[in-house]
Image (cartoon, rainbow, N blue to C red):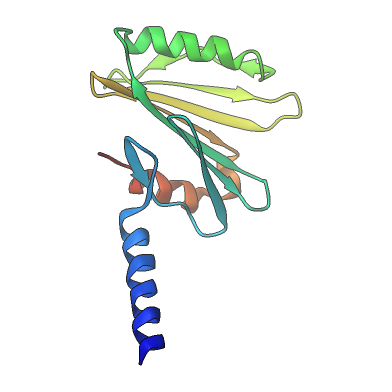
Length: 144
């Protein structure tokens, strides 16, 4: 009987965690099965267990910067580690996106959005390796 209660309690905790996603401070996100999630400051890092893809999500204060300024600053920073970095371009909603490529041809896509107070920067690397996983993780992001 006692073992059943413990097992039931563990199951409730696991199912609750899965329903609400992993907590990354300002947001929650479900990490896809076969991926490992971690955190570095305001950034959630999801890495496919076979190391073929990764997904980072950063939510932090804009601190008075505009989306255009942030997009340019992030693109400049990415130029330090990517062989090719495209120019950030605004879409009809005012969000910015750009593509990047490593020296050995691995492609990433960056997307910068904001709600006025915080920005959200997503970087998706090798989406072709797991498109459904990326879709599920993006769809599960909930700002707190």
